[in-house]
Length: 237
Image 1 (cartoon, rainbow, N blue to C red):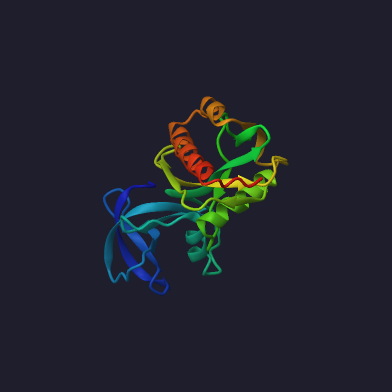
Image 2: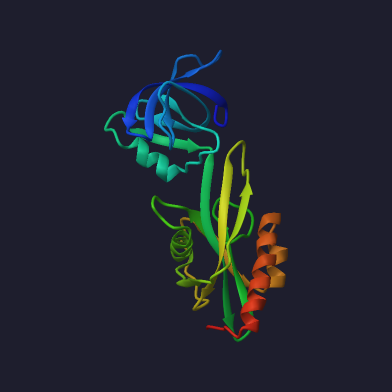
């Protein structure tokens, strides 16, 4: 049902101006209970899209509906749905996902190296990244995730922000925001629960290691940004 276009009818308000209880209208889903999330007040009915499926602690599943064009990620939805004590939300599958990370580089005696990591559940090399938490700014997410996954303290290079949109599986729509981050050291300590391995490689080598076209595009932009930094003489070690 996720990503399905539906019509929803409002039963009552759960969170003023933001969250409503309701039910779905349609031939195959008539009178199925749902939550409605929106930035605009809803009085009776609305056309929308199923942006999440919430599993309650009693095993019941409820669709979460919002108007097309309004995007909500898991932390925000969980915040809204936790406003009432019962029933509790056990799990939620969301249409939209958002992560932030960075192309981490280190400038040492052997030149500029790029950090690549391989997740425990992944087969390919990529950049450290992770999901945005509630109320967190994009850059703060990238810095936190890099610290958690690699134990590196990094500084974000101003003016670099690349967005990668794709569908990793099924109908899920994922957005990843990448920054360019300077590491003060190349001493990595991986988070073993998340990261399987890491490598420091040259920009040229990193292109042969990365399998995803989106990652290579980000690397191309990062290379241009690093050349500009070099021209300005900004080399912090």
